[in-house]
Image (cartoon, rainbow over all chains, first blue to last red):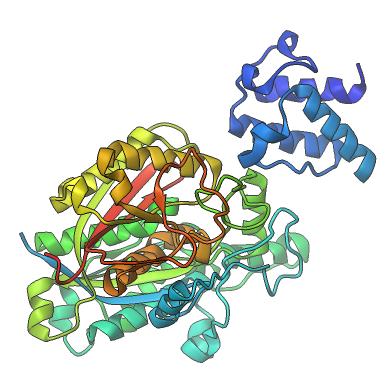
Length: 83
Length: 407
């Protein structure tokens, strides 16, 4: 597991009531029942941590990100692009 | 029951800084959403805004007064000046009337740009002092107080705040005060000045702002567009208006409100439906009496689908007979002023037998099964219209108006 993946899981655990064992690349965001406000906080924390901007819109969240892996890949791509 | 007349209307918005310009924009389908102007930097997540343009505060108020006026107070004052002039009232000439007149003008963001300028001086520019009038400019009652001072209104006066439902709450309160006889007249509405860097950053951070433009009820909508402005009305007893011989713009007939007591941002069908039902009950209306709804219609995924359920819940099998539009597609979401701008649009619908279109709608979202008016709008009599406002924080306020000859 990459550092980036680990850090994102740490952030998700910190901002939600989810336990670490439920988090994996394949975990579906709908199944984790992360609220949209928690998700906004997660994105904010990820942006602060990696000093990037994530093009996330709560209105299109369902079509943009299905699994945690999608988020990890999107962050990795932004780090690559903006870092 | 005492009937209440709207005898004055005033508006400041992205589609016009007076009622006739606003009306013309609705008739010509000329939306006012565009890239922000006059800012050093625009947040990346903001594409267009419903910004007030060509508003010359200096020419309207002069240098001395302007020093004490945050833009939200300027917009509120300008709209009140227009509404009071339309109603043909001179409060200074009649102190007894002035004392029997309420002034209830709310705001969502209050003097946010004044605070922003002060904080930028302190934390960005390293200066040691802020504008000496920061407090009286920025306080939430500044617009309301400035209107009372400008016109000599000396009755009950205060500001209300309930985010996106602010103006509807202010208008509805004034309506009930006139109807109950607590006051003879009321100057009511909402005002907000929101197109500034700090506020746009705050909205960007919440991740609910549209990627392109405001597309209410459209399948491809991606969020709301920030607007600003003011909408102010003069309300008085119907019989007084008739006796004065002043033109009556519309009759105000209902006001309903409720709290979701649910989520701070996500709307509730049940909570909003109670406000719509309360408004119908207050007005003595059956669902079949309503021709048109100026929807809250923010173009967020959550609001529009929820609002469609709200309307279906209350109107049942009468839903398809109600034309629905969201004029936020013209002027953006003016938050504390939204209900004010939208009540002007609802009154225009009554007066002109014309429902303006919801602009930018490419394909109706199946999750919003309503008769949403699109294209070039719709001609046809509108006897009774509702105007919905469902605020963040789950505070809902709905107004009902009737055409002057439709009682």
